[in-house]
Image 1 (tube, rainbow, N blue to C red):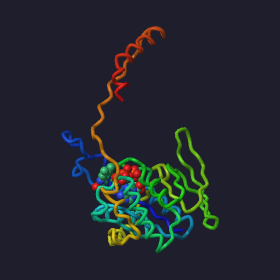
Image 2 (cartoon, rainbow, N blue to C red; image 1 turned 135 degrees about the vertical axis):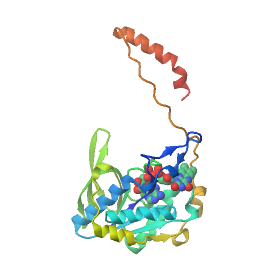
Image 3 (tube, rainbow, N blue to C red; image 1 turned 180 degrees about the vertical axis):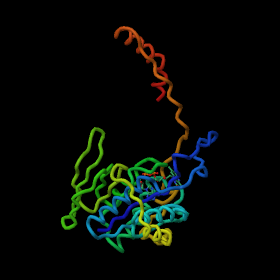
Image 4 (cartoon, rainbow, N blue to C red; image 1 turned 90 degrees about the horizontal axis):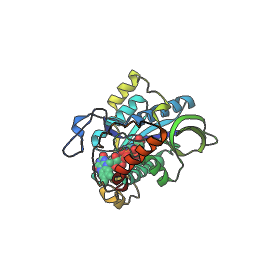
Length: 272
Ligand SMILES: Cc1cc2nc3c(=O)[nH]c(=O)nc-3n(C[C@H](O)[C@H](O)[C@H](O)COP(=O)(O)OP(=O)(O)OC[C@H]3O[C@@H](n4cnc5c(N)ncnc54)[C@H](O)[C@@H]3O)c2cc1C
């Protein structure tokens, strides 16, 4: 079983500050960390490998050279090896171009060792779109299963896996065909303390770094800013919601008051 986990380096949004003048993230105000959902994905891969008693866990990241830190962190959790794709050609990528570049790197990895399972976080805590995982699955033409909270009954000989995924009012059980791509929720597991041997391995580990020239059949027009049709129209901090208003009186009086309030605010609704 070869599992590849896609891991992203993100600023710690719990402490990051927003520049009130430009309304952009002040990236220097927070340290870069492994996206927390991706840490859970790596932990789940470790659990699967332990249960099967064999397997290889690779991690893959796209980012600047400093993103090797999240690969080392993944090795600490229990991954076996890591790949970073880093090149100016990837800069300015939106989710479409990111999933394209990652799918090309996955193609190279799977040429060396066929990939059975790809795992991603549910979303990245900075970009927060949740589009990259399903985007990769679409490009590789494998099924995506999102918001997974449990992986069980992984049958290697029949290439099947049973997945529990979170939905609005409960959960759903899905039997998926392997290879497939999962995006995981934090509830899937708890991150265990890393054993000393993993920490030593991580400290000494040198991830494989690939540039765009190391990937095959790449259409450069689909990479980076050139390959990114997304336009950021506006960035702003949402206004704090005003306190609610309690309606008083009989139900009829309350309906009258409500109609009056809605009518006062009609510009707000019509402008959206
Ligand atoms: C026009 C435009 C330009 C941009 N330019 C840049 C830029 O120059 N530099 C920059 O850092 N960002 C840039 N971004 C942001 C970038 O598009 C997103 O950070 C990236 O596509 C991931 O999207 P997301 O954060 O919503 O991830 P999500 O889709 O929420 O992530 C889901 C999961 O996908 C995987 N994943 C996501 N990104 C990566 C990654 N890079 N490596 C490995 N796995 C990953 C992880 O498993 C993650 O948990 C730009 C965005 C736009 C719209």
